[in-house]
Length: 151
Image (cartoon, rainbow, N blue to C red; front, side, top):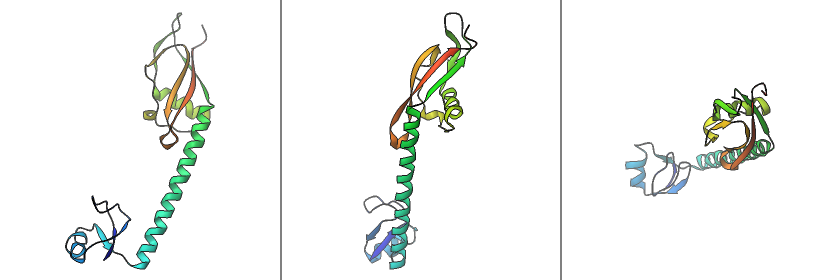
């Protein structure tokens, strides 16, 4: 008997897959727990359509991530911070500061948890800050930190 899995089942398959199972297994275990439903030609066609739509959406999201990564790779950020005469900052530049600067410069919202500022930026200078873009990989954003007012 053919069944469409509604949830991932270890050893059987992932949600959305059409699998062949014994009638008793389907009737006594899978259906009562709402883990699967009986596969009809219409339901199989619907599952295939939704799988194609999900694949197209994933491909589009991956392409957008690659474009954003390329855009960020060409971006040069300039951050100003209060600093002493020797160029040491009063505080540090955080991943949140870099995320805000990216949004101001390019209009792209990046979650600060995907930006790694390690070790923390505590002095004026030029830095490369890695940004995790998911499927597109890690891109580096050139960041220039200058003292506020250029004293």
